[in-house]
Image 1 (cartoon, helix red, strand yellow):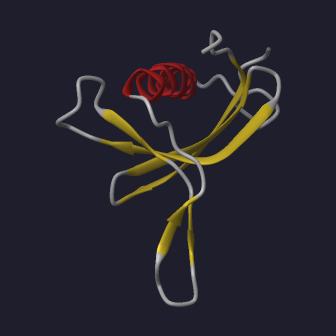
Image 2 (tube, one colour):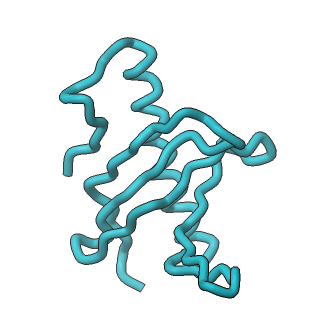
Length: 107
């Protein structure tokens, strides 16, 4: 496997509900867009957050995964990168730093 590179991480904070605190999107290896990644609080995790990848609900109420990491190391990589950006945003919001109403990691 080639080295993973994540860029253009965008975080959209939401009003916390049932542990959901934000949504994230990013570009992987300048070739694949991943969107609608939910960020939830998770007290039992080392980093206190977990990622939930998008699913599609079919007409028979079956949930089908759209995208998700297969290897634990890849999942941890995405979690580390995305949560790092989320924590930067929370820190900036606490300081009152908001730029153009958007929070985005520049490539």
